[in-house]
Image 1 (tube, rainbow, N blue to C red):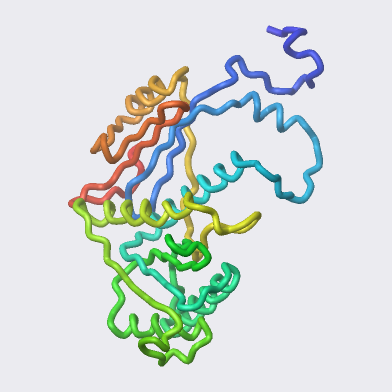
Image 2 (cartoon, rainbow, N blue to C red):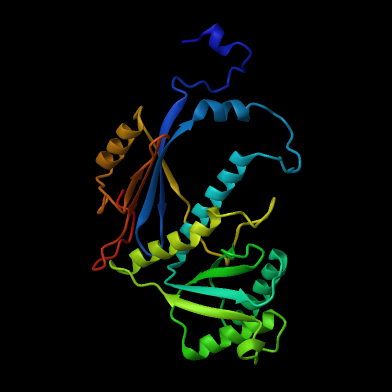
Amino acid sequence: PYSSSEYSGRAINYPLYEKPVHFRAKVQEFSGGGFEVVISSVNLQRHADRASMHVPRGPRTERKGDQESIEKARRRAKRSVRLKVKEMGADHLITFTTRATISRDELKAAWGRFTDNVSYHMKRKFEYVCVCEPHPTNPDHLHLHAAIRGRLSSREMVLFRRCWYIALGATGKEKGAAAPGGFNIRHIRVKGGAHRRMDKIASYISKYITKEDCAGFNKKRYWASKINLKEARAYWLKAVSIKEAVTEFCREFDFVPADMKQDFFQARNIDLAWMRCVPDPGGIWSHVPF
């Protein structure tokens, strides 16, 4: 029913919710099988209030001391890196280093030259997710961690090393102390099959996002090739608490995480729960089971 106190000063078509907070389950599916679910509380009334404020948007400006915004940006970047790594099916990690201390912009330019050169010689698009990390003992010295898919042959490893040297301004034939940088590739071995390996790599490479920020204002914290991540699907729940929301989702969609230690997490101080489905090594999930 209409209430003058509630609708005072609002347009007739202005949305007004009985409950300000609702619970939403957001499902992210991956092309190689499996999915992740994030259940969180959403203040729909606050979103409606903001949408009703017709204020023109201006250019982004840096706000000094806004640590909360910085942390939110880091969390968004970390989640994006993790999802992209899992979507591309990464199974190897490469570390790129430089002998000289160069700036982040110079390192980014060198990485761009490297990826272009590699794609040209391999006759296909080079897929990667790359993050920049300061050296633990010398923060001014930066190096790169890149997640890739597929095993490199000995010929391809020589090509990668040569292209990296050329990207740093050398001829590509340097050896030993004359080399302008380094190149190291690792194959991650874990129990549970390829999907557990992807989870391991995704967690490993995304952790650098939340370390000391070396990106600066209005600059991306990672670099990635074009990876077509499927659009997430949202389901609104009737629950009024996070525990009820998790129970409702699992009941309605007949879903239970396989490993409660690895595949389920519930935050303590906020209304947030995270679950994932890792396909069985002997079978393949073709679709989300709901």
